[in-house]
Image 1 (cartoon, one colour):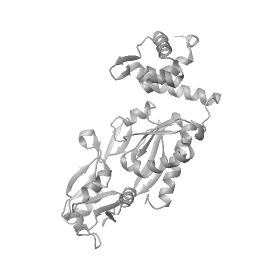
Image 2 (spheres, helix red, strand yellow):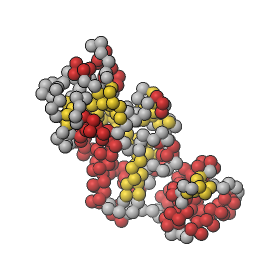
Image 3 (spheres, one colour):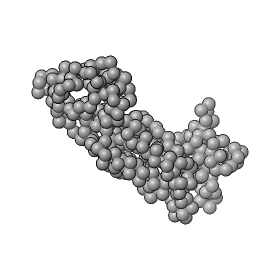
Image 4 (cartoon, one colour):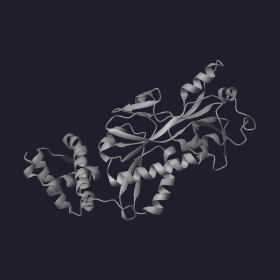
Length: 328
């Protein structure tokens, strides 16, 4: 196929249909009729020699060829826009939609204040939060369907970039009126009272040593330092009793409310959950490691103006949290 036969507008149509999986939505984005979008896809199919998209009950499903093409096409379009300077980003006028992958802890601690700031400085910008626990997270970043992933990553492949947001230790939560509430928490308490822990994936999802590895991206599956806990109790000849393991941190208050269980959680989450006044925060009676929360994005977005702006806002929010003591 000669590039001389290629209308670059066809690539914009392809990118919009791949993102929206719907001809009508893609047309609205491009200010084209559904008929025009269909005609453009037909021309591109003829050039490429592949169906590219198949109609299903859930919309336009990309073929394997389309899925392979999508990241490079999106990258090329953004490079052309950046080179020509045709897409300047003005936050206060933008109606851009950003997709962030985050768990409920990160959503409560970082995304909530980020949303409040965007309402003040960029009220037309929308956020879509996808679960960072999904098993195809790295693939979604590669395909450009996730703009930024926030979490704890042990390994980040070279095609992705990362920046540290905060480092934090752990805290132990208990209900008000807990038998251990009026004294210093001890290792014997941690051994005696059953625990609530957060785990978003086990060995059945491919987790190894508390991390899930996919396409070179290793992300945390357990939100507590299991090894530190086990080693501390092993010196007493005890083992931790994990009575309840949950994938959602915001379920913890309900689980602790009428129970003598304890919960080990990241410090920033513990501070957020104690603001209601029904839970108490205590430092763990053993030394646990620090966990570093990072933002991860694809390198093709390194110099994209809109992405740069979003990352700067996320970093600023995280810095404020850390300076206030919520990230320690």
